[in-house]
Length: 142
Image (cartoon, rainbow, N blue to C red; front, top):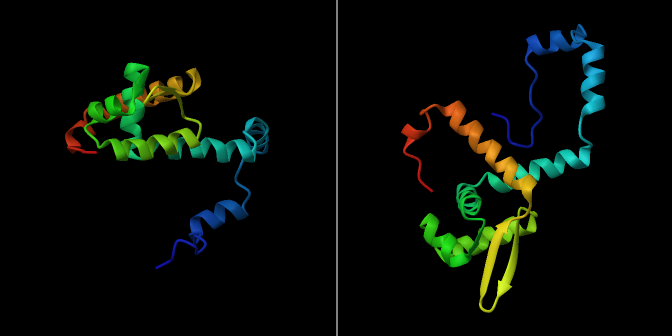
């Protein structure tokens, strides 16, 4: 069995496709021309990684619904401890997904900008559209 650091073994059918140059040069050129830069690709993957943890996704969902919440309200809305929510908010803040403001002893959080809101909304639409009840029956918990 290969470890995570081992290179993936290419099965013979894929080798044949590669060696026979079975691709459309024009399509490949168009794809490469329109692709994001390597730095942007890494940054995009970090955004998706930030939203990939269920507790962070729940936090983002609560912020989508309420615009701005303090840590205590987020914790109560998703049934999580304040310390767990604070840790995840710090991660989201470090990855430029949420912003915060202080008011006396409270810290209020909101989604960073309209782009993040739109991305999360489209993601939710996709999940709801593609699952058509399949995920609803999974009995997932945070």
